[in-house]
Amino acid sequence: MMNYLRPTFLLLVSALFLVACQSDQSSQPSMVTEPASSATETQVAFDNFSQEFIEAMLAHSPEWAIYQGRYENAGTMTLPTPAQRASNLDFLTTWLEALQVFDPADLTDAQQSDYALLENTLNARLWYQQDFRSWQWNPASYNPARTIAVLLNTDFAPVEDRLRLVMSRLESVPAYYEAARQNIDRPTTEHLDLAIVQSNGAFSVLNDALIERARASELSATEKAEFEQYHTAATAAIKGWIDYLATLSEQWAGRDDVRSFRIGEALYEKKFAYDIQSQFTARALYERALNEKEQLLIEMDEITIDLWPKYFSDTSIPQDRFERIGMLIDHLSDQHVALEDFVPEIRRQIPLLAEFVRENDLLFQDPEKPLVVRETPLYMRGTGAIASVSSPGPFNPGAETYYNITPLEHYGPEAAASYLREYNHWILQILNIHEAIPGHYTQLLHSNLSPSLVKSLFGNGAMIEGWAVYSERMMLEEGWGDHEPELWLMHGKWLLRVVHNAILDYEVQVLGRGRDEIIAMLQNEAFQETSEATQKWRRATLSQVQLTSYYTGYAEIYALREQMKANLGDEFNLRDWHNEFLSYGSAPVPVIARLMNR
Ligand code: ZN
Image: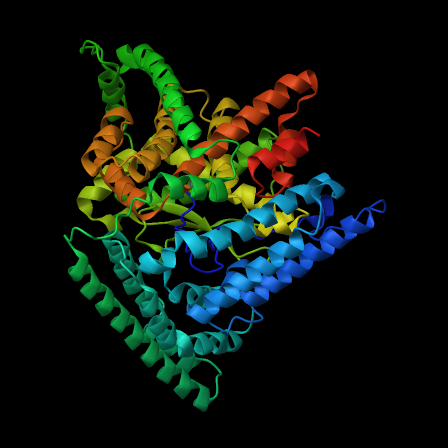
């Protein structure tokens, strides 16, 4: 999982998309596209256009810029007012028209894919604002503490300069929430509750420690006094916002005309097309996932039958396949680390994974950029993800990349015990492959080496998640874990979960299936622990489409590799294939497929 619930009302993408890493540029392409000497006038013009558009976006949305690692306008907070939406509409339509002056047929292949990404980005943002309108019904999209936390935690300038930017944003917080209140119209109760949790999380950023930090800095006495004054007003505004949300939550609870969190088929297909950029429709992907589920169950059942005598010499094997697979998984899940060893064990495994990738020559790794394992900051908790990778954007190559782990104690003793079984001896390895090496961390590192800033900045979530899921299976195929059948069985369970993410998202958001049915399916047919199944239901009520990205990307990447392997025969080299695949940045898989098959 990359931990992101996309705030959709503004020009925001998740802060968690991109990693910055350029320390070994000698063997890699440079960041900025140099037009080849044979480039036509149009091709040169298109590169200029891309650069201008990116600069305009950075100026237009200081928040988006902060997440990407550019801070020129970081002191200016965008207020979610009607005037701002009008300006946004104007910005998007103007740039879309300017883009469409180019004929893609006149561009290079790489530029054509940039064109496709830019067009999708602009159209998607228009659609989010005009049609999806979550700025009206999702109060969790308002959280000014997120950008403030980035400014405080990213070491891009002397602390006093960063505190001045924070101070300037704090000054706008009361007006920000005033505008947000005007926007809220029939919120869903699920998003109201999420907003209350996350807004309370803002106090892990705005608190006495921040005041102390300002006092201890070299700000002038006047600045320090102002800082405290704005901080006090901002804190009061957050409290007022939380009270307002609590009142709304009470008003709407149990009413017949409350807005459903289910977006329905029409919006879902559109959102799927914009967010995933797949070769499939949402419906087709759903049907594909149902087939994959059956295939996986057949394979897992074969392993179960083989392993049965090893673990259950005295118990006869059940007739029902779900029962026997479930019993073996349940038995194996007893093998897990102690609660207090959860984070330390993750720290221990990261260098072992890097070494395996190096020894087996699986892809390029940058030895200069270690991954920093840390406990998930409080303001980022609350969406249900245990692990995530977060990092600054491609403009800020010096900053740290974090592997965030939520300590299981956070969930209470009962849920923690359940999570330990879920993230047992085998699954914990797969989690680390997925999140870190060679999953998200490695992919995002390559993404920032990509010559296309467009692909680095407007990355495709399905490609990013799909790569992480692909990397799990690839590592096992290459011998991580010595082809141990138990690891393959657990991988089957993990992949089944990914497949179910796609299935349940469609069933919840489009087909209207209910909580009990979904949780029963996850427990009985995907062998998930109660805590995991319950959290997944919660997530499926709070986000839409994002849960399908893992499976869509995985299915497309794996199919592409197998197809090219068959075409190239003996000339196929896995390391080269991985490096080339990753060199296109976080572009949609169908776009990469077209470029690789040139
Ligand atoms: Zn992921």
